[in-house]
Length: 154
Image 1 (cartoon, rainbow, N blue to C red):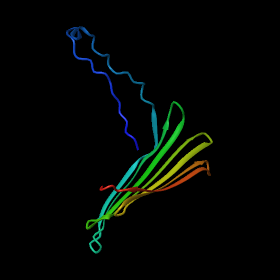
Image 2: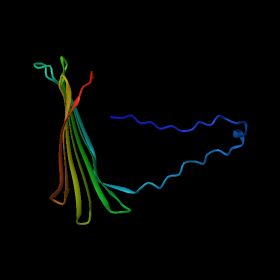
Image 3: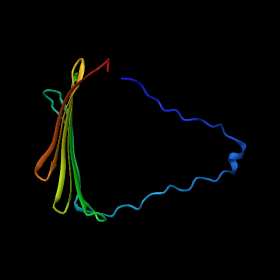
Image 4: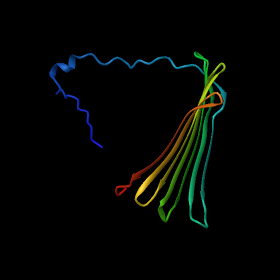
């Protein structure tokens, strides 16, 4: 892979800079009015298996279900993360992610489900992922990945 860069010209300060007007305050659009239809939630846990030594950290959460009043768009997001490792074996590290997003307005509904598993081996990391997209109940897109990334002394 090649490298890239971004260079900007640098102008040295000048005496007349003191006469420049200050920047105006930043501009932003008004916040969207949102109604929470279902509350969000979060659940965390850390477990340590005293027999095997494995440590597992899990986080499941949801932003709840919300509706943007200006557009009538309803959306919800749920996530689950699980990380595990055996303290005596760095190659036992494993990360599992699951995300679900859904959007709807009237009788229109779309959603995505994504899962990623990252594992560590002696010479490489392995990334396995899946992405499924749905319109209503019909799956309209699906893709799977299974990639190995050399550790390169990492």
